[in-house]
Image 1 (tube, one colour):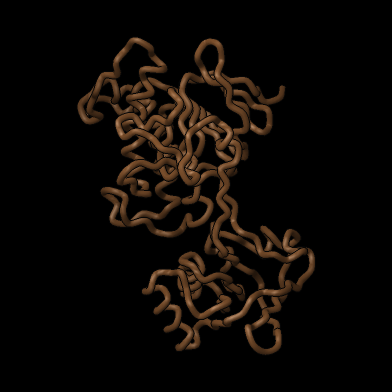
Image 2: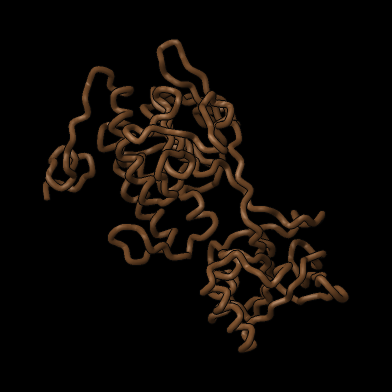
Amino acid sequence: MGEDKRHKTDAIIIGAGPVGLFAVFELGLLDMKAHVIDILDRPGGQCAELYPEKSIYDIPAFPSILAQELVDNLMAQIAPFHPVFHLSRMAEKLEKLANGHWLLVTDDGTSIEAPVIIIAAGGGSFVPKRLPLPDIEAYEGISVFYAVRKKDYFSGKKLVVAGGGDSALDWTIALQDGVADHISLIHRRDEFRAAPDSVNKMHHLVKEGKIDFHMAQISALHGENGKLDAVTVKPKAGESFDIKCDCLLAFYGLTMKLGPIAEFGLHFEKNLIPVNTEKFETSVPAIFAIGDINTYPGKQKLILSGFHEAALMAHAAYSYVYPGKTARFQYTTSSSNIHEKLGVGDL
């Protein structure tokens, strides 16, 4: 039998980044079940897609935690609530039903009905900016990459890293240290958008002869069956030349697209969704926005802030899922009811 494409639940969360995942937990504590939609093929948002092996330093109680480890911990935390994930799908259409619920349809025809919608989509759907070369598709995923998911894949390889932001310099520094055989960093100018400390470290590595830096742009790829042999780079002045390499890491940033969310009838301000700070509700009742997608006075784009927003949102969403009832506040440390839900017993 094929996959069931019609569902009913309490809340639909658009976006499976850390804030969307934590929203599952906060909803679950209040007996609300969630379906989660994400355009990526795995939960975790940017943490899983762009920097899974980079450390995050501002998560409470974790002096340092890898981005993927944070995602894994969140997935373990929400496991007792059995969320349903619809991955590699985009939220495409939204309509209000006669019973007051919402019907959301994804781009593959999956339909989900719920009284509450929670948008936790970061800046919207995001895709890496691709190299503007006609034959790039043949190499992508084989020897051309826009993110580092496993450092070991690049062990012993000759790498070209392209870009001038934090990702380009962070991975240049990290991969040269006992991972890659050799790294050449390519950037079109000698000014960088990265943290000053990273820029200083990069220049120090160049001075020591541990990496090469070329002020140039990539103009051609060479190889067969998706495997790179070399890239041609064109400096600002002088003749083009080739650099032998096994892989190219291109960090040119992200293209953020709101996609169909922009057609949901919400009020937007500069591609962000204004919300109130009591409920984090949008201009449309029963549609909430949490995380980087929302805006309000004093907004800070931090995972920590998104976690706070998810907690308040869940208590406000309760009244739509259970009309006429009031959510009862309980401490997770002392509530036997919550312990039973989490499967931990009385502590």
